[in-house]
Image 1 (cartoon, rainbow, N blue to C red):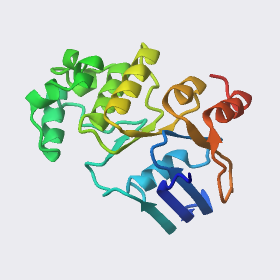
Image 2 (cartoon, rainbow, N blue to C red):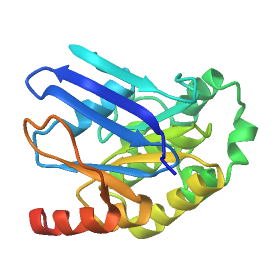
Image 3 (cartoon, rainbow, N blue to C red):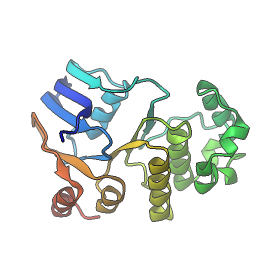
Image 4 (tube, rainbow, N blue to C red):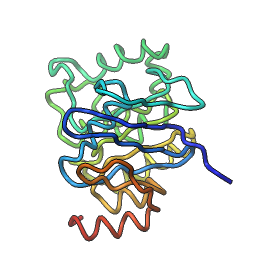
Length: 222
């Protein structure tokens, strides 16, 4: 049975990175985007999230309405106002999703990611790991259809536990993961297929997680 793509990227041109690039990301498949440095992995995700505009080509999401409630994005860099408290940031963002703080406090992820321990902290006082856990929470608390994770587990202490928490939450709430990572462990735990991008390629072959892990081992140290 053929698995239809949830995202079809066709003849994409962007800056000097992508020239006539095409890729189909299968539905119901947690998907890894790996590759050499400078191959535009983050740019690709930002294009899919409408944070960058492609020069030419098309991106089509199938079987879903693409909007701020169906797409989650956890960037490798945060740009929050440093003087805000975590609680204030949450209050601002949950209004977009028609939720209240009591509802947020009852989400399993709230305590599992230890957000309850930093709720009254100012953002500028968070450690690297606390910042990453908060970013993961903000990308997932409203249960999007797809979540894009861009090197989202860097700087996290108890990294394997956090990966397990995210994996379980996405399974329970049927959230499809699209992951950028160089880590064999992250890819093996969170995805079951993916691509390895190289410069100037036009179409990417989709590999199983096992095949992709072998490619990564030969390219990077984890």
